[in-house]
Length: 101
Image 1: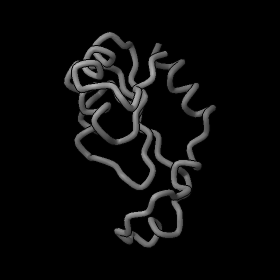
Image 2: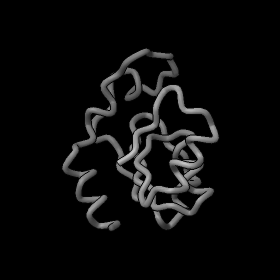
Image 3: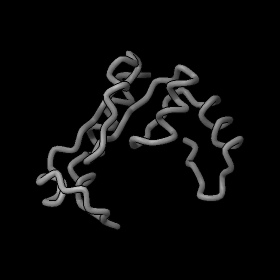
Image 4: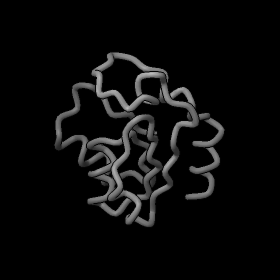
């Protein structure tokens, strides 16, 4: 298991992803780089999602079962913290990893 650190530069991030078997990421740079290297990806989606990932066959998309009130109403407020990702259970992620290995 390798964590992305806040002070990782882009080169370090590319190397970490290139050397990984499975990428677990939210919608963002990690998932896009994972696609570039043709990696297996578990994509954790709260209020955001990008449809292109559906065409990438090595991906398991795990969507949150319950969005926060702001995102249920599809308001585009910038919030520093919402509860959307709390709907994703660790057990769901575990079984997705197990299935991919």
